[in-house]
Length: 444
Image (tube, rainbow, N blue to C red; front, top):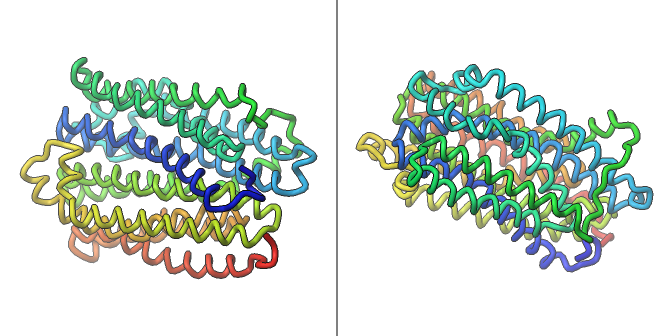
């Protein structure tokens, strides 16, 4: 299919199916780990994985920084006159160089400061051994998780979204089967869950690497001119998507510390469930953004405004569907989520429904806010994407997490994200209308 000439609807649906498959299986990694560990080791296991969650947020966000940032520029160059000069592969090479550096830095930090990081993330003395046991096999292959994110973005933009999905799917299937076998029959407990995740990620990377031996491949390493300038452009373009995941890690740390101080370990166990539900909702939003972004980027480079607006209409319809689905599940079936992720105690059953229902209100606007960052990046409005990601991911949300339990009862903490998403959505709607209206109707 041709980004510039093919009918938008089948093109979008093809990319949505591939992106959703990738996002679905990516979220399954953490969900299956949480479910297996919760069933095997109870609420403490769930709480331990909540402590580890920021590690995932950071490593995935670094992969998105180089992957989304570089691939947006790659596709924009491909849709413009830069294609003839091969400039697009200079962005791929610059993204690869940045990924190597960031992977090495993150790997060293986890290997050298694991205990300090986990304590900072909210681990108590009781939870620390469980968290460290889970990370033992994962820290051996930590860079693999970053490269999976980076490569998947470029494969989608290089016309091979199916292979990106196949890689994630194969790794996810191994992770699901391995989780059960390692945790229960082999009696490895939380270590087994980490081992299955580590091996699954390696399977995903190996499959994605086969793209470079296929006829579809146009990606190649070249000598980039003005490397520092390209790295800066990649960072600016990809920062908002990067910060969404980093912010989730920051918010998890803030929530963990506030929950332990104000509400106790049982509430932290429930928050461990919420992290996984929220991750799933975010992955649905990612899939819409990842499906639309290559189409919009190439057409933006070619100045085809009508095709961009048509893609946006389909994207917003998908976003609305996911928003209603997840909000409804959180409001009407909170106990279902609890029983998926753990064998609950009476205390958990008493507090979980109210917590999940209140926090779940944020799912009504979360998909729109996250999708907007992909849209703004694709039409080269990184400042708008920056405002959205930083506001919802740190400024507004962080202030509410810290202030609500001080000003109001401790349980008001759970309102932090619904209020954050509402305030952010007001800006998103105004900015999206403004920038979309400015696109040329006469072209495309």
